[in-house]
Figure 1 (cartoon, rainbow, N blue to C red):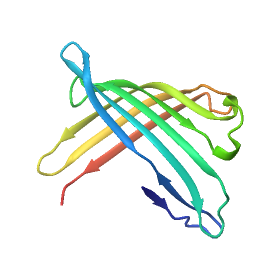
Figure 2 (tube, rainbow, N blue to C red):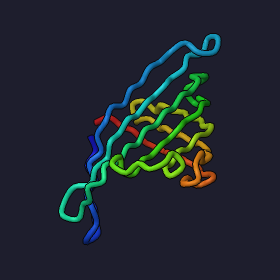
Figure 3 (cartoon, rainbow, N blue to C red):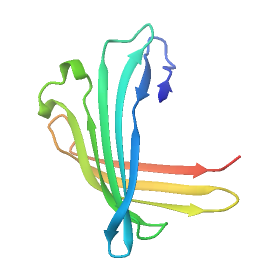
Length: 140
């Protein structure tokens, strides 16, 4: 569950809800694979909200070669309003290669990263996009 509060006057607040399913399987030779599936539903709430309920599916699979380098691919989708989903070509879908990794600075935390290039599959989706994530985790 995620709650986002709009900071500007007149902006909407949103609630995102859904499962994150992750499974490690055998892969290529001695290397396993990590598969992650997100199935999120998002709704606006509050005084400036609409009745829009969106669906945001995502899939990522990567080969666990080394903790510092795990290549794979990912797919992202987006239906802005399930009540008026429209044609497939009006929805947003991206697919592309990615790689991820993590370095453990125990006991000082962990640095994680993901970098990918996504290609649009429909006319409503940008032709290409770079997606990146950089994260520092520390336990308290």
